[in-house]
Image (cartoon, rainbow, N blue to C red; front, side, top):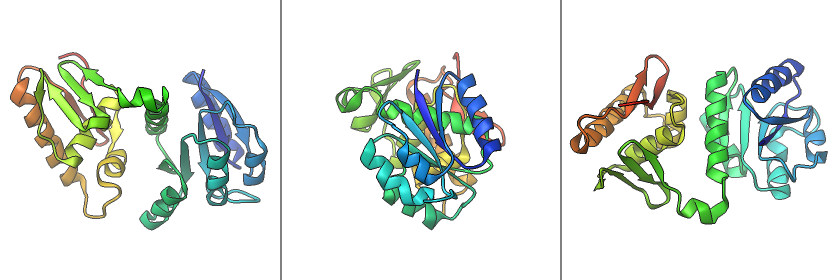
Length: 228
């Protein structure tokens, strides 16, 4: 069972997260301040959910210290939605960012993606292959094949396809897609995503016209389609 460490001073949010995570098969450890968070043994923790506005030392202040104790994924939870602030947090060592109030499914999808990215260590990651229907993706080689045919994908198209594949049948919200494929580029918008999704679908159909791979979840985002 994977263990998640929640560092959050709001009791109500702690309770909600605890119920959500335990209901999805995770073990939970808690801390209610930045100072307390650094005192907890994280040797067997797999991922950290970190609030920024904490009593004592702030979440921003303790990111490097947490990473120094153990290099595991840290997902920031904050109401701050400023792009420059997010970039600063990534520079400090944060691995992901979710804006409050967040959708439960989005948070779970981000947790799943981060845990998968660290599973098995570097050696296993080098050989990692994602297979969905007739699609085969080699993330570390930046290659994707359909029925053995190499897809000619742009950087954004590959990262978009990889994100959807890594999350299986779970919906990837547009905010997740902006972060993964465009890294919060202010010029990216809904139409940009739609255009790139259309291009990826077209390239998949070129070699596999009878199979549907990407499904639209109206008003939310996209996911890999189950079945054919």
